Image (cartoon, rainbow, N blue to C red; front, side):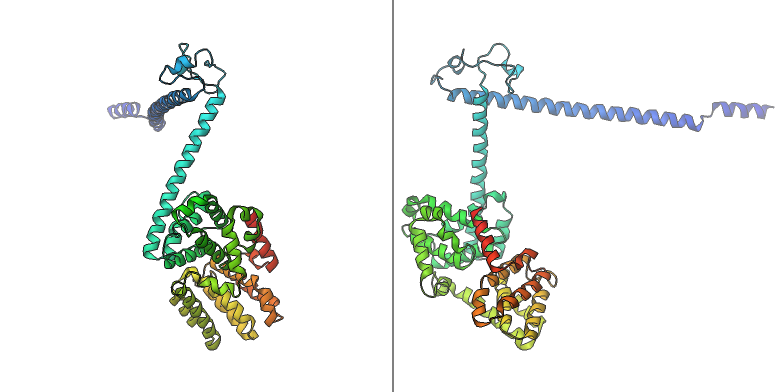
Amino acid sequence: MAHAHKGKHGKKGAKRPEEDSDVNAEEIVKAAETAVAARAAVLQAESDAELQAKRDRKAAIRAKGLASLPGARKGGDMMAATSGRIKPSEDDPLYDEALDSGGAAGGMSPSDEQRLARAEAAACRAEELAQFKRRVEDILTEFFVSHDIDDTVASLRALHPPALRPEIAKRILLLSLDRSDTDRELASRLLSACYGEVLTMLHISKGFNMLFELGSDMEKDSPDAIRTLARFLARAVVDEVLPPAFLMDPDVEAAGGPVVEEARSLLSAPHAAARMEHVWGAAAAASVIELKEQVHLAVEELFDTGSVVEFERCVRDLASPSFHHEVVKRAIVVAVGREDRERRLAAEALKHLGPAGVGLISETQGERGIRRVLAQKADLALDTPAAPALVDELVAAATAAGLAAPAADAPAGASAAAATAEHSA
């Protein structure tokens, strides 16, 4: 009986599982409520601080605005200067009772507030542009010491915002005006390397136009500026980073004046393309000419040996990724005048080197090389009547291999039209 009694009390004193569950649930709810309350307190503190900062800022804006309003007396009381003319209104979207209470006659009209807001936005843009210019100049100063085109392109690509990129083209040219011919050759090559990677034709054309606007101010700092800039402009057309139509644009002609006129003269001379390749002197252009010769020899060796692997080694030995567009162009152009077997070999080699293969040649470089080939279709047809069709076949193969976007296999006329449209945008 005692045993039974003990057992009875034991059952009565024990908590049921559902009671434990209720207790745990209550504790969880209380803990959650405590956490929410703590978080709300933090948010309220942050909100109060933000509101106070906003009020302080508005007070400063009002003070600045009042000083510039018509009728404000110099050295006098700005509040008195506007008394009776501008009054706080609860209908004003910027009305703040905490700031405007007490009958203070320091309010501003909506139009004045908008004017100050625009001025603030303009100041922010000006500061952003100034910082962008400083970063570009730092990168270019390092470039003229290191001569490392690929690293410089990567650094320029990382700059933001992209809307300011015409400033890159402008700075490349402007910082080169008072430098040696060797540095100017480097600048031309950098501008060419940036095309498609960092800059578009529109960016580059805007960069030149910004320099045209400097006019006589540029000549004061660099007396030979017109001659130098004309050579940069002609070289940019030969390097295909600007369309020839750019020089025929009436607005460009009006802005550029003697620079555009001299550039046209340079490009109309016999063998203009060859001359522009060493416009900064034979010594300065030697590296570019040597690279082109090495590419040509590599392509010839590909067709002689039939070894795609050896061709890859030769291209790697160039150690100049920014010049891979020449590899694509030369492989297609030479293949057009060869037999079917060699054309198939060229297509195989480009596929191997492109994104679909070892990834040595980027899509950007591939597209640029293809654009250059498409621009020469008519000239190639003079020696090889079937050239246009053969070029289209090779371009289609390169596109399928990832060396260009599908739109890159448009006809030469369409390509030129696209370039002109890009400039006109």
